[in-house]
Image (cartoon, rainbow, N blue to C red):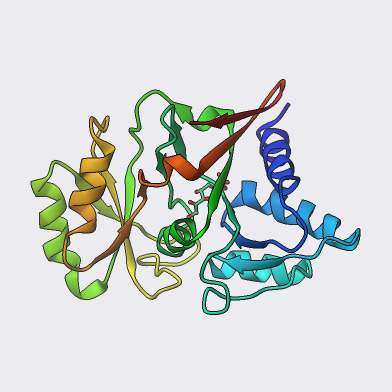
Length: 227
Ligand code: 5RP
């Protein structure tokens, strides 16, 4: 099985958990895209749902697939959010934000009754150790860089791949990718980062573990992990 196959099987399994009438947070990234494709196929078969996109990417894919969209203004408590992750540990804490959509993803995850994370099984780790994305307002960039260094992180401004200069998020901000090495206490790091003035949010998602289901796509099919 290729990585794409593993992602597709996780995404499809998540889409099959969706029930008629639900309002679903639509995450960002390549694995969630498979869930959206499967949802679109189910809509063709009569499923009625509405989606709340977490990024311009998710909104445009949902429109292409004819998934009806709504907003948190109309539905502030979605039934479920389906989203991807960059790392997951065995306590279901996450690092997210490779797609720079972490702030809206966190808002939708917090608002939703259930969070379903879809990932290729290689994202499961014993200890979270990937760089943590931090969304920061441009005005606060330098003080936030100093603040992150003071708690042991090494921040790097994320730059565009097919654009010169920094990545600008859907909210008009910058991303700092912050290396901390192995995170002994992800909750503490999340708390410290989130409290820095000018930080909008960080890619550590530690507070949703009780409502999180992780679906890991592997060579032998999907593994579903819950607390
Ligand atoms: C975007 C994210 C993505 O959900 C995460 O990066 C996983 O992406 P993919 O499914 O493409 O591996 O957090 O901000």
